[in-house]
Length: 411
Figure 1 (cartoon, rainbow, N blue to C red):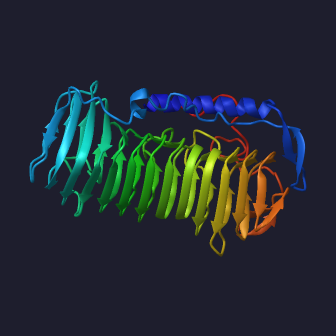
Figure 2: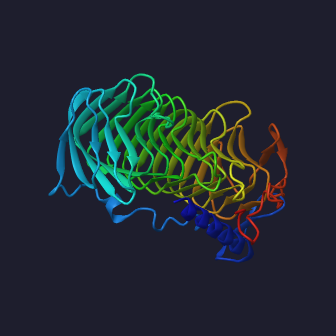
């Protein structure tokens, strides 16, 4: 998966470079005074290739149980799945773990059917080895870890559902997770395509090394840390978040959505209340309904990855931002800022803070109750600055406010 993401980032760099040189239609730009005018303008709406993000099986909300094996959990007894197949898990127990340990070429589908598992120190589901695991819900399911997690040798188990491999959550039922640490963790890719998922946790609610992708479903999160967190501290070419649909409600003490590389939103309804709303190196919003209430930056792009340039792109959607008082920015980009479509409504003392180039081509902008065709820039603690200027140099030596130049990211 890591090679796939690295290739995607190379493609991203090429696309942005071509977009910087070409035109894709008549729209608008920003004059030296920061007002919108009409001209040919580029778009970067294909920044992250997600055309093959979800498989047909990811999107199927019911499992083929014609040849399924039924497993009934019992108090104090772990169940180990050692062969590929579909498994229906039932029962209500304490201190039991469903373990998946199959060859890394095999797929396993776990159907949770009105299951309740309450553990003191171990995950309810632990994927040790597999090609991919599907967790499909029917009925009402509750998974809880109430105490301090214990490690499995050198593996730090820290989530109610903990996976070393790809996992997909789908289904027609509900899943309620309560955790003293993380809710759901994958050391590879984590996908959600259906079901109703509720997570109340002390640390990250949804966590993955490589990516988090949501196609559909109803997700409600309350966390003392981050809502969605995609990061691998040994490789800054991975860690993206893609949201294509669903209803997502996040209440987070820190970041609602945090990615190392790209946050791309093309659909869905998001309601966010957090310290920071959406954070990543490149944040691209193409569609969807997004409501953010934040006490720090609502949308914040910074250099978390050296593989791509920093920027914020709003190409579509209906976005509402309500900010707390003080030195807080509604949209903060340490690189470029593109406003190319959609509606952006901001209630804030500091609507924008950007360090690089500004392209204001088509977004309907409403600031503090008034529709406007100009963008003011608050920089360095709230002092008004100019419009559309170039910012500092990024670690690759190019202006941080511009899309990447040809040659691709660092390998």
